[in-house]
Length: 65
Image: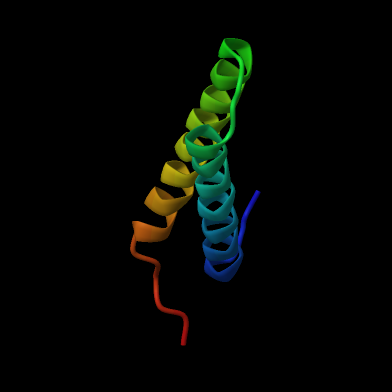
């Protein structure tokens, strides 16, 4: 799938927002051990997606004139 840089930046921003929401949930909510595990796993998955998108954004693109 080819995504534009703008689309990738939007996805990175959305992932960062969701990761922050998960972190807040971990910090503020009374969660069971299983819920903490689920939220942490989801957070780690989203972070890996964010990192991959960020790497793709960091690759120099050829200028089109």
